[in-house]
Length: 430
Image 1 (cartoon, rainbow, N blue to C red):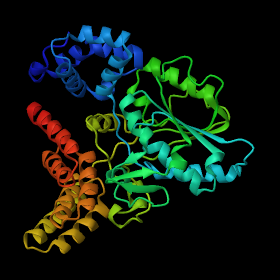
Image 2 (cartoon, rainbow, N blue to C red; image 1 turned 90 degrees about the vertical axis):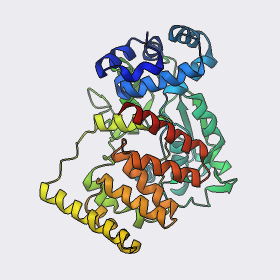
Image 3 (cartoon, helix red, strand yellow; image 1 turned 90 degrees about the horizontal axis):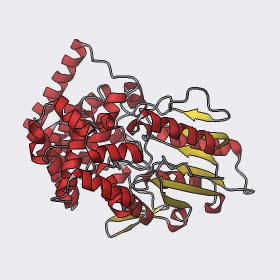
Image 4 (cartoon, rainbow, N blue to C red; image 1 turned 30 degrees about the vertical axis):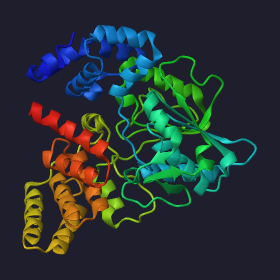
């Protein structure tokens, strides 16, 4: 059994890994949900177990696992502690462009609705983006239907409301055609929300989608969290539910989707790595992009888990820059800092924007850009820059501190508290 949560930090990495793998709750999740513990990492899982122990003081992990096996409410509460519900609207926009092309090429008729599957759907960002894309391409609401599934009941409860904070738009301004501002939340159009059917789905359920097939399937960033047997099960599920000629989208860390042979009749799309230099140059500096679509990184309690998984499974690692190039970057950063120290904030921002066009994976430059934007009270740009810095360097404490402060200034005290708690855990293990 895992030791008392308060003593976890004293364990060595190997002891921690062995302790996590032998934990009854972790074993239960492996069996019931297909979770691969290494996809999250021993430290993240130990944090989740610590949170679980605090929620149920006095109960052993064995008792919690047995209760979760027998009681649906307890099962949901346990799953909620280990879920990674990090997403944003129009994540990987090139895939939604492919969706447009696919629908237009098929000249989808009204004889039967286009059927789309979004799995997992997190808090509704992906199915909302799908619905908007299909509406913009010319399909009437009655001409398509979306099944959106997730295992986390709390995420589904939020998704069913169709509400999103500004951070879910990645710095863009929500299109008033599809969103209504109400009580500092953006509400998805009721006509679009009505086309999305949310279901609580366990991908290991052998009775899933009996008699159903889908023309488009979004299955992104699911397989990276599953062990081998569970991945094989999901692949077979997708083979069964993909309609002839279906379009299948995968996540950035899932280049092959574990298909041992081509999926007959399916156009299989692989998304580009969000951290690739080529992709970043094609998209350009996010501060100068058109502000119609996108999504500001919406962090949750376990946002570092997906960062760690992507870093571990990235299909094409970023090469280390040439020493001369890296030296040039540092000199440019120093010039920006000097501009800022001299009170020339516009000059500092211009220098940094030019540097980030050249070096879009330079975390320290993104952090400084966030600091300058915050000093200018441009909170939206500050949040964009700091989220990028946090993605590139999740352990950078100054970034976490400033993100927490921005969340507090923006009125999202719960988000600020989550970041501070994560920072406190990090500082406790470093």
